[in-house]
Length: 141
Length: 92
Image (cartoon, rainbow over all chains, first blue to last red; front, side, top):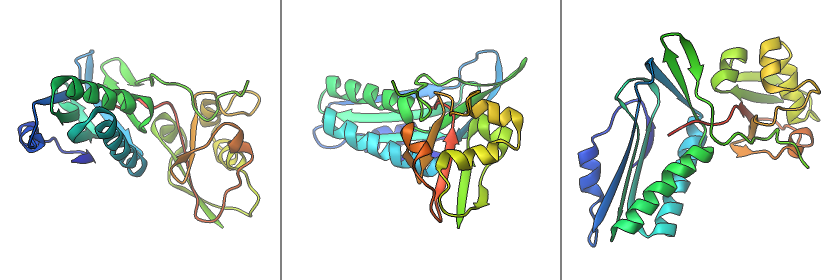
């Protein structure tokens, strides 16, 4: 399941469905809204492009890390502290592949998938700065 | 011809989004975005530097594909194009 959606997802169901013949490890990454003195968090996506990029990341992760199955569910809309933002489920024959594949997926999402977070704070709202700041305006040297 | 310009996140708040523009052919992506952004000073300053170039961190896509810096001033928009302009991503 690769999705960008408002609704939460049943993680146990995803884990069960990720268990294919030969599976020895399922790694679950659950990114949640942290209590950084915020009221809520608002998430926005360039949905068509973000979904296509998540699908590509999942396919690349399977190929590069010998994963059997990948789920990526990224939520958008308004979320409260403690709610799930991003669920990644990666299954493989052994734990090294499952861990490495899961890590690859989250780092690739952070690098380039067009999704943004706005913290709705008690002292004013703030867009969360991206970790990879170079864009099309990057100067050519 | 008609081109759609979409701003996201902070840029959307400053300039709006899903803006349909009627243009004659020959307009570059950078010129089109600049023309729209110029209508609101704060939005313009968020996207362009004092020389009128995109800020280094600004990401521009044409029909879902990222444009390299030099391409924004050379690639011309065509009928039905969707241009997206946004700040660095922060998903996950």
